[in-house]
Image 1 (tube, one colour):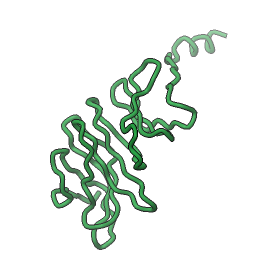
Image 2 (tube, one colour; image 1 turned 90 degrees about the horizontal axis):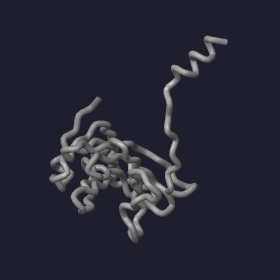
Image 3 (cartoon, one colour; image 1 turned 90 degrees about the vertical axis):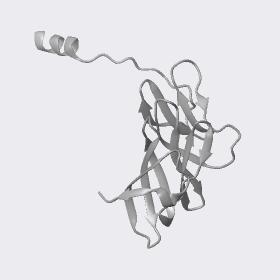
Image 4 (cartoon, rainbow, N blue to C red; image 1 turned 60 degrees about the vertical axis):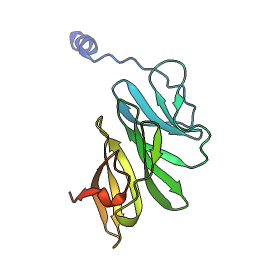
Length: 148
C-alpha cells in the first residue's frame, strides 16, 4: 500500500492544456512556452490563452512549418505538387533560400541568431542532411553544407 502511494506522490505533475487550434492541428515544435503547429488553416503559434496566431493568413501556398525559435521566426517547406522548397519567415519577411543545386530543400530548425538547419539535394541528386545558413543570406550559393 505504501509503495503505490509513494509512487503517486513522487510522480511528476503535468498541467495539460488544450491548444485551441482545431481538431486537424498537429503540433510540431516547442520553443520556451510556445507551441508551433500546422492545420488546414495553416501554420500557427500558440503561447497560451484562448486562441492561436496564424503565421500566414490569406496565403494560398501550402507552407508546412517544421521549426521555430523564441522570436517567432519559422522554418519549413512549401509543398508544390511533389516538390518541397525550404522557407524562412524571419523579421516579417518570407524568403525561399533554395537548394544546393537540386530540386528539394526543407528547413527543420532555426536558432535564436537566425541560423537555419535542414535538408537539401545537390544538382547530382545527393541528399545532404545538415545544411545551415543564416537568415540574412538569401541565396542557396551561400548555404554551408556538411555531411553527417
